[in-house]
Image (tube, rainbow, N blue to C red; front, side, top):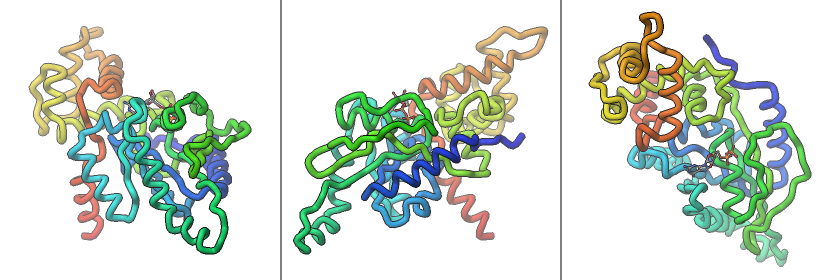
Length: 292
Ligand code: GDP
């Protein structure tokens, strides 16, 4: 089944983001540190064009640091500035302000040289749903201003919040969802809660989670459910092993529905431990494949 990942209201939200982008000097793109590539908007450069950008790997407390570090280098090699944050616990947020000032230092120096008194730097936060945009804004300014409920397409009067004397931040984050046809990206976005469950085939998503775990985090998978599967085992077979451990059979059959929900819930509540869904060597393999 091909999933319609891009509901209509998202197109409207994207248009709104483009409008707001005109107002700012620098963009903070929040991605989820557990899948920095999949939650990154690959059209960011096209959309944001000449603005400065900082990519913020938020939820750094939830990821597998070794794997995510590879993605940091990947983005840095493409010329992006990357900052790690844990917005929920207010970790490293000031680093974002420092980096923004660094990025815009030249522009400010040019204005000063021309005798222009530099106005405050204007910034905004963008990102796919659920990466922590509102939390980030609220913690950064230490007040509840950004609504944590996702309401793309709902306009309200926007305000500039002062981060310090040099930087202002738009109080409403921009929700940007790229149009993509890669089903794997869609499934990862579903796991991190960016796509609503009611438009997602959760059976596919949970089998995909099993696949990622069996190749990259087999021990975590076996430990959590006290099973003993291998990466050679079929995904459905692994699901049945989990079902066997956790649920009673229904009419002689495995309780697939409950198992599907359990797997996804266990990922979302970090029961598997620190996991990074985007695997760097997979990207290299795909690139090699494309070249051949
Ligand atoms: P938004 O849709 O991008 O505005 O995301 P929210 O700010 O509403 O955050 C979504 C969920 O992620 C909330 O439950 C937050 O508490 C949680 N969250 C945000 N930032 C972090 C973080 O850095 N670490 C962790 N563990 N959770 C976070």
